[in-house]
Length: 128
Image 1 (spheres, rainbow, N blue to C red):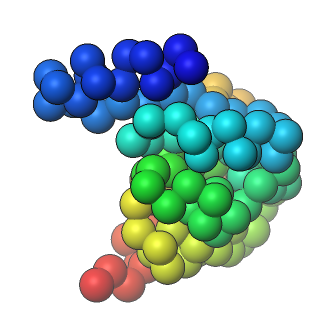
Image 2 (spheres, rainbow, N blue to C red):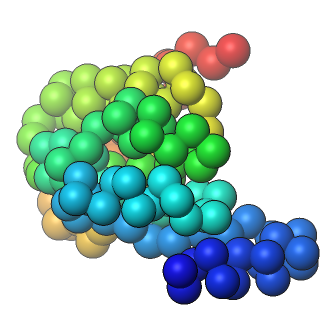
C-alpha cells in the first residue's frame, strides 16, 4: 500500500517510480506485481537470489528490471563471468525492460578481470 499511495504523485511529476528490491523475493513476488512501480532496482538473480531475470520479467510484465550482477559470479574466472553476462543479457533481451547494473562493492582484485569480462560480453552482445 505504501508504494501505491505515492505512485500517482511520482507519475504526475513525469518520473519513473522505482524501488530497491534484492535478496530473496520469491515469497513476495505476487506483492511486487501489485505495486504501481515502474522499475524493480537491484534485483539479484540466481545464484545469489531466488528468481531468474526471465521469471521476474514474466511475473512483472508492466515493470522494468534493473539487474544487479551477482557478486558470487564475479568472483569466478573471467570466462564464467562472460558466460553469466551473456545469459543475463539473453534473458533480458527476450522480454525487453531490462538494465544490467552493479550495486555491490566487489573485491578490488576482481575489478579489472571481472568488470572487464562483463564489458567484453556486453560489447560483443548483438543488439537489435
